[in-house]
Image (cartoon, rainbow, N blue to C red; front, side):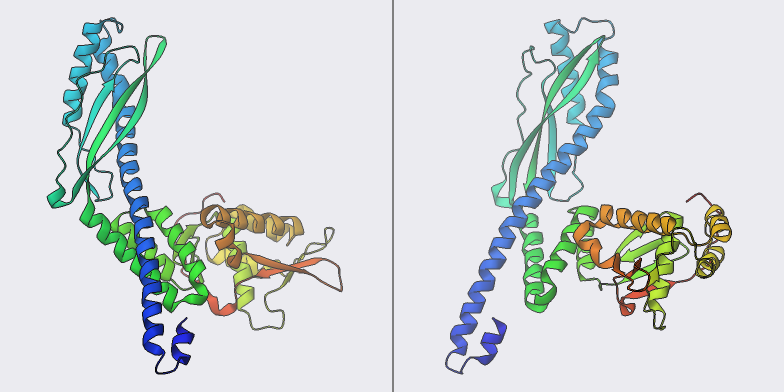
Length: 368
């Protein structure tokens, strides 16, 4: 569409600009609404999960103390215990860690399914003038008394800070639309990295900043020998020691300017490659590799089975953390060698996207 605006005649340009403006405004509104609904649900879900975790940790011992000399079926006992629980809940602070909720209050709806419910909770009054809207969620928590398992039901009522909710999501939607305009070729990948960032860091203001930095990070991979970790598109992933060094070894070969261009031919199953094992051994020794892996390479050389195992371990780690689609550009490509009929492998990343940081670690050796 931007090309259309650039090639239009002078008479048509105002109409084209208006059409583009309407097009992107509609997208911005739809994106804002979608993000607002999702973040409101995530905020309430976060607060509910926080309450569930607190109740699961404290409720069983609290009830055991209150009911140790009482019959749980007694209506008077249920009423007294429910009253005491609601008094404790009134002092409980629940925030959800999103900054979008306030004045959250929890209330016991029933301690036993067969018991009469306590008096209903009088929730915070809607404050429409200040943009605070009431939202509520229910949750069940199991508890035991003697040999029986009972289920207590609670309700959480909060006020949603609507101006903050709308403002954050309008800004985030604007950033998405700007990405659509400025980065059309990589938009789908940028949005995928943004979703991954939100999943990893949460829907808080610091989390959104982290997610945005991941989405806008360069499509590169950095190897940190000291941390035994890779940073892919702004996402730092610690790896098990031995797979990390095999991964870094392949990266070093990819950076090499030789004619091999990073390709590593898998050795024959009955003839390990001792010559190619030397650089990998030197890397492990200089950067704190696991002694067992170093001894194995020194004794047996590079073996096809071990190379396959470590490539697969790297693949499993990256796919688990990034997902198959995002991890694919940072894994291995293969082709069959015409002379030996065996497969050879190299990193998919081009050398320009690979960086290796070579600090010497100070930590003691630990298992792979």
